[in-house]
Image (cartoon, rainbow, N blue to C red; front, side, top):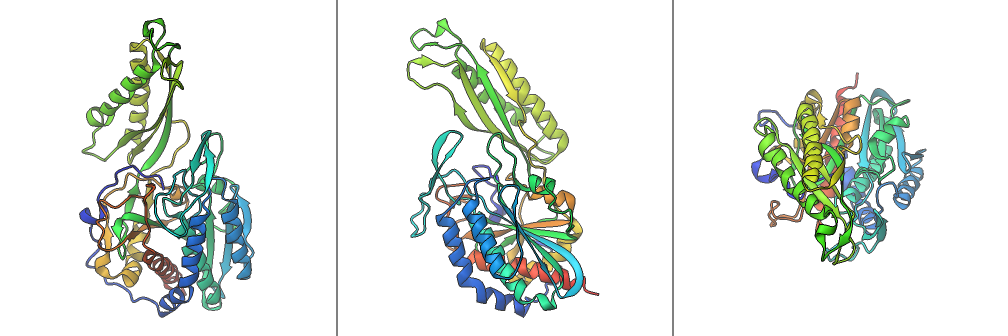
Amino acid sequence: MRLMPALLASALLATPLFAHAQSAQERPEVAAAAKAVQKNVVAWRRDFHQHPELSNREERTAAKVAEHLRALGLKPKVGIAHHGVVAIIQGGKPGPKVALRADMDALPVTEQVDLPFASKATATFRGEAVGVMHACGHDAHTSILLGIADALVKMKADLPGSVMLVFQPSEEGAPDGEEGGASLMLEEGLFKDFKPDAMFGLHVFSTLPVGQIGVRQGPLMAASDKFTIKVKGRQTHGSRPWGGIDPIVAAADVVGTAQTIVSRRTDIAKLPAVVSFGAIKGGIRYNIIPDEVELVGTIRTFDEGMRQKIFADLKNVAEHVSVANGATAEASVPDNDGNPVTVNDPALTARMIPSLKAVAGADNVIEPPLQMGAEDFSFYAKEVPSMFFFVGATSKGIDPVTAPSNHSPKFTLDEASLDLGLRALLQVTLDYLHQSEG
């Protein structure tokens, strides 16, 4: 999940969802399955956490997933979108088709959490040596879905319908020059022979306390677009700035002026939007003004018209502010296709709210505000009716608003969220299948 540094305070701003709706009861087979696989799910999560892999590099993770699925008697397809793993559980009775998704990749973040299974992994990202950490919680998602696979295989004789398990690589975005993630899985035929009637996914979330679930109908998470701006000047000695053109000063002006795009040019009374710079690279020595500075960042929107206008505004700012400083700019805005808005199918979401309440309790299922974080689950949601929900990950007694967020080197997952996530996703799956029976 692509998150902004400061997320909206979901736990404080959210309200109980559909308080008038009558909750179902938790299925006894759900509680029994969760109890039976709990130790394994925790062990898998700790193993994946200790051995994280960057996007499009999830070789070990995918191998472990495929190995366990084969041990269950399934026949997983591997190598989809590089390291994706997909398996289908065919129920013993006719019924609908459901797909469940878990993402597997980690982030270029050096872990700062004191755990016996903390990551010590390193890798190269954008040409630099980096630490690697499951700072977003994908280790939890993968482990939860493996637990659900165990449960569904054991009850498949009485299962009305079939379930596709999608273990997806590269949710955080493919490395520069590569393709990956949900869009590539779809391009490579994920739904060619198995088109789900519904698809479900979840995400552990630092801004909700453990025990809570967050979900909303319609738009949930923002569209996400990456941009690259190269400000080009002319190299000179730091003592003689007049002898060249300083791209660092020009780039600083670009960053500053770009803040007016949202604050002064975008109607945020309509819907929220964000323009953020994530990296600035230029120069190598204290007394040399370099030729070029590279800026990279992200744009988050919920409206296509606003999205296109911000593209144009940022390109305009980059080019004209650079020229005003005597430099030039190459502005790739955006520099890839980006993720669309993650939209929960309203009818499907309303139908499944009682299932979430059944496992979490009616007062613990809340409607969070629109989230500026993004998810490539959005690509699946454009193809089939889908629902994506958040599972609280912050321990009781810790303020979720100030807790280290997803993507932080201090992100800490309360492992009680594994149990709730598994029960919620399994309950939703079984309720959907059985409600459609007959």
